[in-house]
Image (spheres, rainbow over the protein chains, first blue to last red):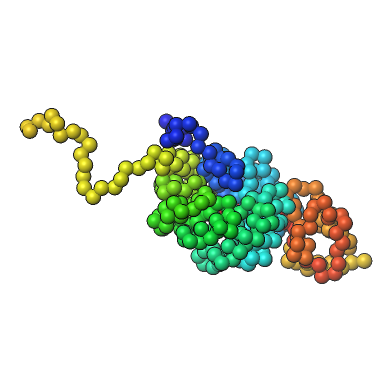
Length: 268
Length: 69
């Protein structure tokens, strides 16, 4: 039995992800970059079950028109533009406006990078950009640190969800600070989407077990030896982690607790 | 009349007098989905490309969705 068909703890069978008043069946958000080729990208995203797929906004080639993500994915998925690579408030705000014009969506994955080596978010600019963009009518999902206070500030600034990193983008190191992610999940008034650093399926399941509402990933699927199979593994891991979270894990003990009864043990 | 402007970071000479004419000069179909233009640092809405006049030293960014994470 596939874990995607597991009943949820509520028993309703419906466990939608809600962001800014909109509901999604899938709790996996997929990226559209780094796949070995277009067909693998299409097959992998389909296998992941994602409904939301991220894209960047880039200068158009003046050498001639080539098919891009909008042509390939626009009909079947909801595209979520990002401001990847932006390092200044000005560039992020203009990229956001261009994304809204290009894709006719006010949803935005806001990225403001503070350091090129680690690709860590610039929290100061991020909070300001979130405030500005929310005032301008955007639904802002900021990629941010796994810092509980930063996540609260972003929610205060009007973020529709927060997207803390598990570990540096593309590193595949998984969740470097699960303790922080758990606190963010407990405190955040908006959905928490684990973004960046996922390496393999168990990382995605862990994020969901810690209380994340969704997981966003790209490299872990696109650069896997078999991206399509990994996409399916991620889909199942997200569903399994979510089901386990809703089911409620047992408490940890510092001693053994036998599961077979003592009563009737021979020789006693 | 021709003017020197910057398009996607590169200086070029254009005879186009509007953004829409510039797209055509570049061989781009203004009707293509997903195209967006920043003109001197602000978005030029699609509906106004045909009326947006180009002047010397204007900065034009022509963008579209690309792969991303």
